[in-house]
Length: 443
Image 1 (cartoon, one colour):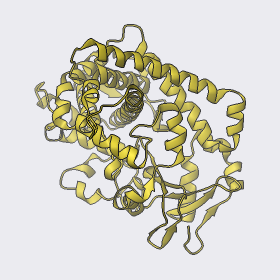
Image 2 (image 1 turned 60 degrees about the vertical axis):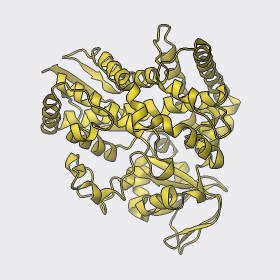
Image 3 (image 1 turned 90 degrees about the horizontal axis):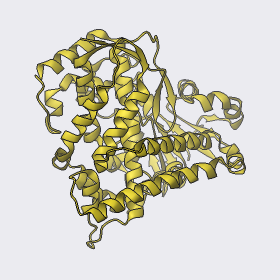
């Protein structure tokens, strides 16, 4: 990469800050952005390096305008893929395009209408477990809710033997293992030597075995459930063939991770923000009771619950679950005078873009009115909650519907409060809340 005097962060500085980077790298990145500007290079070892950026124009460039020149980095296409397989999230090139074309129709809003009732019933069932007048960490609760919504929407599964819970445990363990490998690449040999990676791979094989049994049981049953698994089984490539079981498992694991992880995080952050802003919470409540219990479709979600949606959008600005975008150019490319050489690692901080004072007024303030229909266009080029371009999250409509329904149902039933002064974060593969303690009082 070349541009005059590109600022650099030395490997010595990275190593010196290793402990705090392992715990939470975002303050370290913020310090470097504030000191060095919106793009700089970080030395990760004797030969490895990465380019960090918080330029929304560059984000649009690599994710949308010139996306064909960029692949996802080894962080996802190799490191994450070894645990979850080569599915939509981790595949590159022709393999990704082939899978996207195959799976996209299953996530069309008209197709998703078939599972609306499942989503609503699952959310109501999970919310009935809330115990009023006591404080709880809402993140594990939202994790269970989101995981069950995905599980039942995917394969109408009634969990009588804690199978879904076991899948959740395995995906969580894989994420914890991977984040250590990513943040401490110089200790990779140690993770192999001590068997940590081997043990994680053993667990992920257990998850694959569980899903294989579920898929085979469905294939042999001859029954139709109108769920996502039915849609995936019915999907055909151009040659008329469907996905084999191994590819199906790859895609299901990706849907579990992407569908449950990001949604549970976004729900938790939104509830924390509503608890800390009771006047905004009351507006959500008034919107919820005005609906008179009417069910909404995927098409109606934005028009029936506009303010609730604005709150979720603003929450995902402040705390984007996918807080970084990683790409590697497969050929030399240029942007704004910078030349990105083939194979260079680019890490674009969506978290920093969403809080950049040049693009947002009072960027650290929770203000859902930013996303009023008359103002949204002002931020279209600096807001990436679901990514951008052809690889934008395939389940964004599914996730937004689930979140709108869950938030409105919860606020309709309870007044939500918190004594937490500042929302803490735990950046793993996705951005998670830490100590999200809330209390619920019946309205």
